[in-house]
Amino acid sequence: MKTKAKHRPAARTPATRAVARERVAPYRVGGDDYPFIVRPLTADDGGGYLIEFPDLPGCISDGETVDEAIANGMDAKHAWLAVTREEGRPVPEPGGQLSGKWVQRVPKSLHTRLVERAEREGISLNTLVVSLIAEGLGKSSR
Picture 1: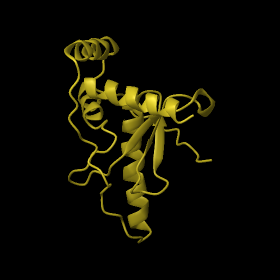
Picture 2: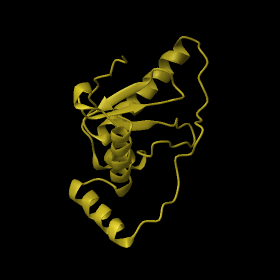
Picture 3: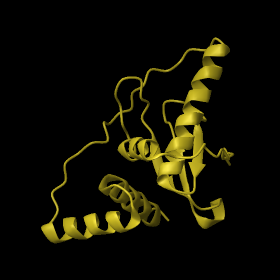
């Protein structure tokens, strides 16, 4: 079983929350960004969300919310890269097999319901949809 990092970031500002929401796509590649996956954890695993970086073996973190998991994951990624460089090991290139981006048409009524729910929860539409998909995939794999 993998050990989860229990790291709590400094106070979040509106700017850091916006960055975290922007980066929530399950895979996001660009510049020096490494693709990552965010998925919900079961109650048995402590709840919250897990973030992992497929290109960086063993680089994982978690958080109570998607945004917190991403912020903690970014800290873990930077630490993983720093230690790898300090030890003189090769640093993998960012990649991933898929971009994680696609365009999905939905009925206007569904779009409206999703936007309303995201606003109620104070998160971006993207964050909400990714969380719902991840939760659904978790349920279907059991």
